[in-house]
Image 1: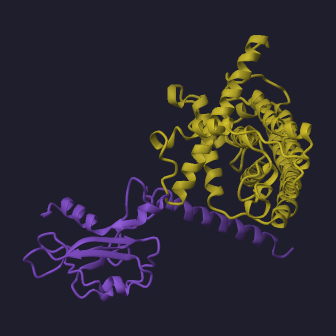
Image 2: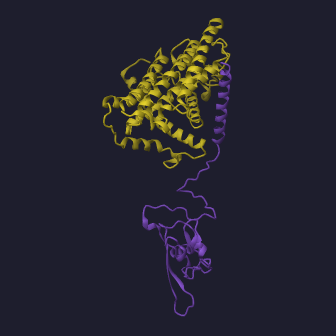
Image 3: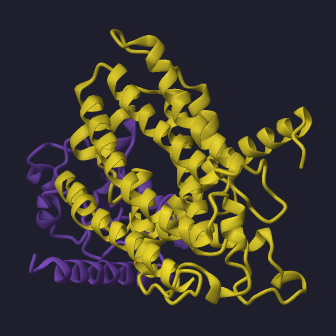
Length: 153
Length: 339
């Protein structure tokens, strides 16, 4: 019997304290983001799938050495290049990333000696179709150049 | 008002419309409230501020298949959701929204509401019993033991108020509290209550019991999702579930109406009757108080975690019932002495 009224009083007070805590949160702004309409800015170090880095003229820095292709433990990367007439360097003609088997290990980025590969900030990586994950990185670079208004030739 | 077929029909129509609209939009109100208490925006997609959400939810519920699982007691299974909904509808007949807005004046209005509220817990038992599902069964046993435990202090507290007002008619109880906020029965030192200082405690008991009666969080043991799937309506789909849902929200409205009438003066203006429009005794004040109380219900729901079944029953039998009994005796004695 001794603790009866103190229990009652303590309980009532703690209930009111709890309600005060939630009431204080009520008028504050939401901390969530209305996802399909609004997007969070991704952190700079976020690892999305890899993408090519373009030079000043917009063309890829890649010299088609195939180091990334060889470094990849799951054979996600397939690339082709050709040497145009009169040129000393090879030029990249296609760079396909098969993201279905990529584990984002970063070996390709590490192995690149020509600053041609980096992680993108792309995080909307969900689809119902397998083909959506076969990503043409050269096309992606061209689109980025177009979006930033850089040269595309 | 004399009772003719026409105004009986109109009263039923208005009651059903009011219950339906409330049930639909209290869900919206609750989801919005939940959102704001958790720093989310709540429903926003359908219509401005998500206002089209309730009708769309309704369409979805109505177009779903009404599934009757094999092995259930079919007749009782079908009756249970109706039984959940209609006591709530009947109770609206006797609730006075203002001195002129009342479907039918019944001299034992309080009694009628409690009689039909008891029928509501019957529907939970019947639903769980006929579902042929052990979780539904456990849930309905819990819900019934809970409603029985909380109906007692609720009734005793109501009797306290009835003693003070000297009437079982809801409109007379409200009318006895006119003339300003200081006349409401929530406050201590009412002359008509014999200067009883425990009236706020009575109000608290009434409030807690209403939350428990409507099986709402933190007393929602009947539908403790983590333990009992969905509780007594586990096996119900489509509008079977919809009726339980609407009945639940209709019961919330009735609980809030009762609190408003018994302790907050019904449609009384808090500043006394000043005679000009917004400050006259008016249905607007009733609705304002009603929805404020419902807001507090929502607030409580999204603040506290669920109690245990033992804690719940202990709270009723060890605290609520003795305190309400004590207050009833004290009030009776004080009225005898002072009033």
